[in-house]
Image 1 (spheres, helix red, strand yellow):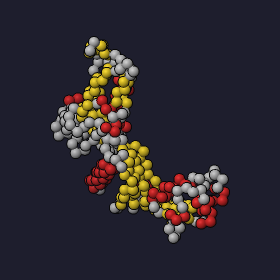
Image 2 (cartoon, rainbow, N blue to C red):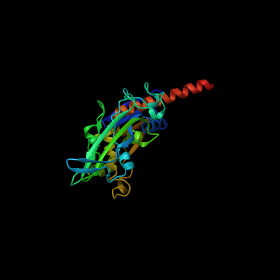
Image 3 (spheres, rainbow, N blue to C red):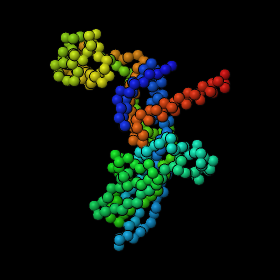
Image 4 (tube, rainbow, N blue to C red):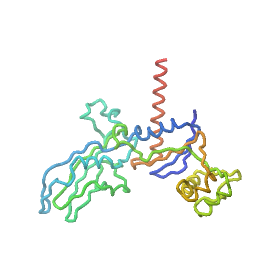
Length: 295
């Protein structure tokens, strides 16, 4: 079975894809793979430096308002730039895979970030922009610098080393690179009654009679989305619904679905989709090998 794909809408963070010649079960498999199996880098362990220091005549203590566990959780959810061609899972790392788990960690499977920040009289908010990557090419993207970590007052400080490794969403949500992952059947609008449809046209919303073709059908995906919104104004619970009834209806297109999701920022939405498809394809390959071995 060859599935056709067409990108309907795309940016670095969002994507909407039309999948044709497939069924609901397979599209749902893609959705689940994106959420649970697509590899991603995320902060897994944090080492906090504890103590008191004197600087410029002031005493600073590592006693922030948030428990270390809460700070570590916030760090785990910061999008870490994921370069699949440069980093490996620690269990597959060519350098340290054979070491015991406690000793693993090298530039091929680990990213280390450090942070040292001091509070202020009015309170200083420590953000993702305060993290420094020990290396090149792993800095937190500027658009995510404003993600808050904690707030420090005068006399308070925080210092830590955070280690990021590759993982999958099925092990922890911090390793899931997507959110808002959903799919729905592709639909087309059907004009059943031109006279009653004027009730919708007279509202001067987005869609007009000119958007339908000579057969009374509206197939443009973007305009169908707008039509769905417009139909809420004449749907159940509205005064217009009594006369409008089924003047315009929506029909599912057999074998066609629209998959949409957002990236968490660790990779582009397109890369997340490509890696998800690779993971799913590998699963089917493994299943085929198992079946051949059994049969």
